[in-house]
Length: 213
Image (cartoon, rainbow, N blue to C red; front, side):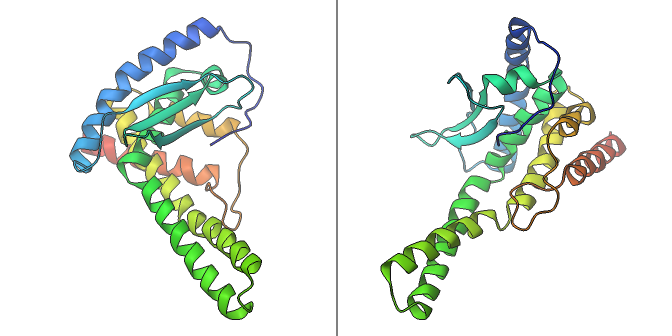
């Protein structure tokens, strides 16, 4: 998800690179262990990559490669923007959680269903115009993909908190990341929930973890 961050003080890029490498080494095995425990049927061998294309905004995202292996990618701007290891670990754990929880497949499935339903409605109501059906399918796919996206983000925040905590980081400090990105508010079909809701999930999850310790 690309984010527009508040201006940060000038950073030492070499220090940020070392921070990234150390955080990957700490978070990756914990994320893979959690993946094998919760979703043993999927590939849990994470590849964590740097998207070094020039001019890319601060962004981290989860996808899969051609072999189906899960990939977590960070742009250079994202690595430069994080203020500490806790923030970087939380973002990394959050993206890993999307894979563990099957969100990418769910969004694809929801988009396919939305496209089919809207296409059928356009076929019946719009007189079968190919252009009308195609437009309706595109709209249906977008609506379908976003229908549960806010829930998915909160679920990934919850599991990401557990992973980051188990890897030795402080998710409450990591959630400080939300204080520096624009608040999406509560827009209809917005892809991300309000920042306050996300922080509340981290706080509630940490309270549960500490109560169980």
